[in-house]
Amino acid sequence: MNFLRDERIKKLAKVLIHHSLKLRPKEKVLIIAPLAAKPLVAAIIQEAYANKSYPYLELYDDELSVAIGQHAEREQLELRVKWDLYKYKDIDASITIAAEANDAEYSALSPEKMKLVGEVLKPANDFLVDERRWVLLNWPTPGLAQKAGMSTTAFADFLLDVCNVDYVKMAERQKRLKELMDKTDKVRIVSPGTDLTFSIKGIPAVMCAGECNIPDGEVYTAPVRESVNGTITFNTPSPYHGKVFHNICLTFKDGKIVKAEASDTNRLNEILDTDEGARYIGEFAIGLNPLIKEPIGDILFDEKICGSLHFTPGDAYYEADNGNNSSIHWDMVLIQRPEYGGGELYFDDVLIRKDGLFVIDSLKGLNPENLT
Image (cartoon, rainbow, N blue to C red; front, top):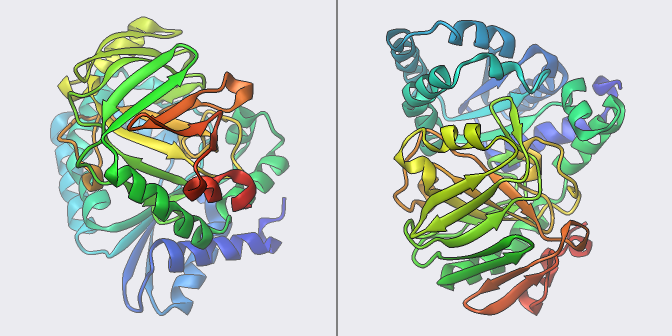
């Protein structure tokens, strides 16, 4: 596919600079990307200069990152954090582009090394997310296309289409969902293998319409930490650092995961034992992108699936903080459309969404046929 001639690349660069980051003249933006994403990086640089902003570039490679991480000790990682924080404090915004060639690349790192890296690098990563404007997106690669079950060309078309939805319309229609979630206390989720209740009282709902993720389309909050009770069974693949889990089923008591089963139950529980916060939930979100309908094994896409929700063991986001802290943040996705078994979502005992479609008038504008 000839990306250099695809006008959607230029359109996406404009979305990133003007909609996502709202970059102003003379502001500094750091572009973190692999060389594979060169066409998009070039378009972003051109658009930044046209905006009279200052672009900077940091190239990375997953295979080389693993080579460094395999033998990295705490002292080396702490020095990297120091460097990263110095750099991040001197920018206004960042664009991170992922271009996954092999989704199992990081499986070469041991669980102990993954834990160490996540723990030590967390302050720099948190600063970039909490203190600076940022946006994250994927570049189409043969590896991602293979996971999606598409040809590389078909996947590139899919990615550019779902990344360029009308985020202005989406944001306007998300306002009513945010307002409702901000007033809601009790949430109940019912699906095959799922009957889960929790409170979101007092925790802000946050709209996501192209500001931090591309593609985008969700409204998220977090449960009151100790309020989660019941069981949830996820019906999509759940990738975690190169390993894909299937049929994850979590049972909660007073907020804590007390039972966890999956296609690899032992490894699942090892991850959930990373630290105390890993067995509590840091995010609850509703997926709303009208063009993303099937899971592809990449969470940046899967968490936005229309008719879905995700529930996240681990760290809570700064904007919707329930007090849970962890070195992990693992989004797990449940699709409630009929072809996936259906399901209901209740707010304060009122049915809000059934089989993936909103059923109350104030929210019907978020159904897929009204967002495309």
